[in-house]
Image (cartoon, rainbow, N blue to C red; front, side, top):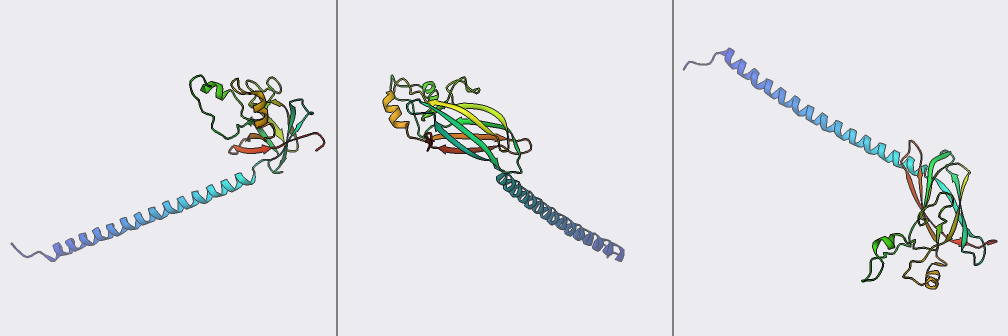
Length: 207
């Protein structure tokens, strides 16, 4: 077999060099892609932090009071006032819901309450008066309404109803001095919703 010509040698060397250059270019491109991905991920993370910060700063601020209408009446008035932030100006929807006392009330032994009976019980001192201001069912939820800065929502409350298996006197002793626990759910177009919690002590007129 004859010796390879210089032309063949140069061609082979050129091919090897080309492969090397292609490998280096491929590695460079791969590093560049990874760097771009990291940069994009960092930018997305920074943008999310900024969105979360803005959402937190724009969290609606409310003053919530509940006042008994008189001794022995079992009636009370809830007033929720939209106080800020000023830049928010308005809310498209504000929904109020009475939360339970935070304890687990499970289905008991035979003859005890079933799941539906437990769900139909408001485990707390007050409920929204059914049929007033749109409150329906057991009086757990006051339907959503729009609200502008500085305006208020006023809702009628009444004593919660003890379940059939519970003594009314014991029920009043258990919940008579407990705060009313609320969810306040707020929505505004262009913003993520807010869900706020309040534990509101019931005050007597003149306090």
